Amino acid sequence: MEYWPRLQRLVARYPDVTALQAQWRACCATRDAIIQHQLPATGLPRLGLAPTDWMFRPTSNARELRATSHLLTHFRWYIAYHYGVWAFITADLMDAWVHEFPHYRYLEVGAGNGLISFGLRQRHVPVICTDTLSWTRENATGRAPWTKVEPLAASAALWRYGDQVDAVIMSWMPDKDPNDAALLRQIRTYFPHLHIFCVGERAGLTDSQLFWSLAHRTADRRLLKLNRYHRQFDGVNDKIYLIS
Image: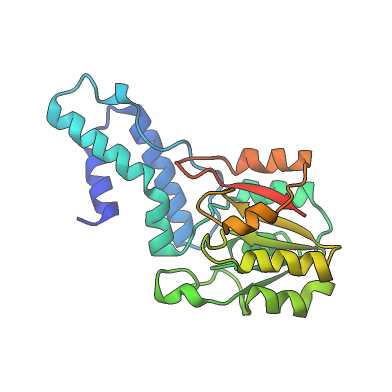
C-alpha cells in the first residue's frame, strides 16, 4: 500500500492516541497547503511517537503504532518525492525573514520548485529565481514550479545577476556535488559584497563536505528568530545560515 493511504488507515485505528492525532492533523494541513502551492502557515511538530504510546498495548497494536511512528518520521521524504519540496518553508518563516532582513534583493540558485522565491515574491521582495531543472527526471523537483524559475546553473546565474542583488540564497544543495564550493569561491573572489543565505544541514544531508569545510558561518542574532520558525521536526537538523 502506498505511503499516504497506509498512514491514513493506521491513524484512523487509534483515535485515542492524542499525539498521533495531533501530528496527523499537522501533516494533513502541510500536505494540503503544498498541493495547493501555498506555504504552510506554520512548521510541523516533532514527528514520531514515544514508546509510552504503545508499550502497554497488545502486541499487534504496539506493532502497528511503531509502524505508524516510522511512517510519520518519513513524511519529509514522501513530500519530497511526490511534490518536490525538500526544505519545509512556512509562511511565518517568510514573514520573519522579510522583517528581519528588509530591503534585500535576492538571487536564489538551485531553487528547485522555487518555494523561497515564491514566499519572497508574495511579500513583494525582489528576487531572481534560478535552477538547472535537472532533477525533473528523478522526482517532482522542478516539474511544477511555484513561481517563475529561470533555467540557469548557479555559476551562470551569479555571473549574470551577481552585480544586481544583495544576497544569494542556496537551499538544500546536493551533498555530493562540489559545485557549491566552487560557487562559494566565485562569490568570494568576484562578488564579495554579497551575503549568502544557506538553508541546509551542516555536514549532513545537504551541500558538499568541501563546501562546509570552506564555509565561514556568520553569527547574527536575527538568524535565531528565523530558525525558531524553521524548527526541526524529524531526523534532519537543517537550519538557516549566513555564510561568508
